[in-house]
Image (cartoon, rainbow, N blue to C red; front, side, top):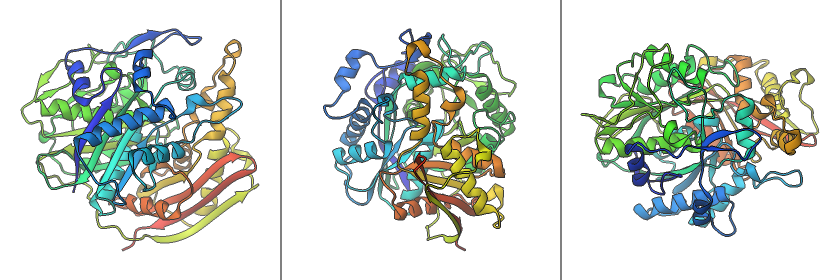
Length: 531
């Protein structure tokens, strides 16, 4: 079974998991006000001295953070860097800060390959780009691949760095707070962004003293691409599928997403109450480290593991008075815990995606188990390529979303599905490059600085999965993966791993790429669980 054998955190609070956790236990934060954009904002960012220390010649800062974090984790536990080990990178926007009118940034898939080769890996890396839930999605995938015997080791690294592109995008959505964020508080005004790298090394091990991913699930709201379902339907479904009978009395805590935005916190609180978990202590760490995007699920998991190993629950900095309708038990003081052996991590993101992950050590649980994987039955297929054009009736969407929706419409025309038991698993090599270029043009000139919220949302590649889910009311797992190049064998391996979720009977999956009007491809199929 999978187990976490080493981990590392690099963030403005410190360059090891232990230091970062200790600083948070001491009540400190790195959230600071900034004024180098046309609007003020508060964020947790590396300062210039830290950047100089962490930089690596020949690599982007994004790549340097990942390499340093992975190397520190590898120094704690020696594992073979052979064909039984895989790198799973988690990021929302990678090197997007290097995007200009003249040149594109290094694609995420290519960066993952550069990182893998630098640390000595030759297997093809997998990048998860699934909005805010990317880190949890990556850890769930690693657990599936290890527990099914596909790999013996997985290096899972979540990393994102901030740039005018990302900060302006969140500002366009009116999601940022000028003050330090206050998760679940009645006075919350919005989120603060952060940057970090966080790594867990997961290996096949029966050591009961190690933390492991017992179970995990992802579910889609099929409600809206940028607003969560008010009653938390997707989050509730992910929690229920993950716990699946695990006694709530054995949970030390729930680590929530807790962005301090109006709708996310409200939705999470309702989902927690509906799941019957109102009595379980809840914490959220954004008030200390900010919203670190692709790193969030991993860094927050590591910090809670470190704290629970010390017998305490980390506090929710910024929380004072409950400002959500769901009955939840938010912890705002460093709190001792008597049974620190299991906790639930929950997280939600744009595109309607929600994830939950149960972590435990020395504890057995009944949750979605990873079965021995077999090649799924391949069903109907739909392909569009070359200069084919997606339907003009979907003009509000960006071209990648239009291409995906059009192809799936064709695929499902004569092939009915059970939307509750269907997943959407998509892949490409260039992420959302077309939408990135469009949004970059809206912020390229400080004197004509008008970032568009509708344009920014589509710079998250998983939004296409959200659009498909909404259109066909698909509530199963949704995820977007980025590979260095099209690799059908790896695509099939990951799609196959999705069937580890016992509630998923079919997957709409395959390659979906849109670079420009002359260069795009959709190659999607329906895969069915093999009986």
